[in-house]
Image (cartoon, rainbow, N blue to C red; front, top):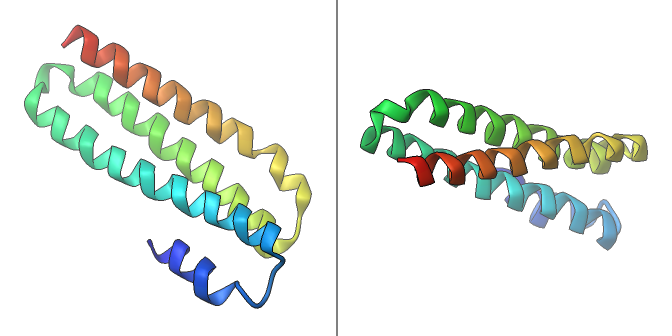
Length: 108
């Protein structure tokens, strides 16, 4: 939430609209995955026997979001386009987390 507010208000006059859109993408995905981590925590309470699988989901979603969003934030704030090469690693981790969540739920 804070990253989104910073992007909308603090960066607006400092970066191009294209770079601002990149920053906002990072903020949006960080927020979505923060909410997903809350959901995973709730699911552990419902299915404690699956807590290790949900833990792996949380690691994939959390690290994936941190790498994905963090690389986008750094790309915009540091003006280092090479950091864009790291972003797909976070995206793959998030996709793997969602896939593992679906698989875990199907088995629950």
